[in-house]
Length: 184
Image (cartoon, rainbow, N blue to C red):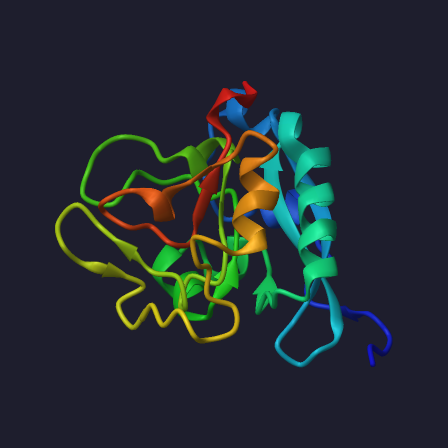
């Protein structure tokens, strides 16, 4: 049985975007949203994601639908808590969205840099990068573990039915990553 909602993050947008230089035209497109989810303690939690304003309502609705399935999310806290260190955030199994950074192993900006991508439970759903590394370094994909995203999971259809792309279907797996690049 669920008890009172537990708050994992309660920041303002300004707090969530502190400590980093972000081009003004990108900063103006971002919005912080509060999402609800079932965590691994079987309680309802509220966390936050910084996303592109065009997908903000969609993100809240998606996480509401995910919560109803019981799929557990460890927590969702803006990456400023990790001083913009993506590896630290992923190693803490933190679900996140905006992070002004390039795609690992390239000089191209990530879709996270516009708030158009979300990584879910990255420690359980690692990315296999272009250079062959696993991100996070201690990440391990174990399909039988709760919080791991499998191709036939309802979480995948919740996102894809709304026009999002899941990179767990690609040959080079990025199990954690969902994005909606046509939103701008």
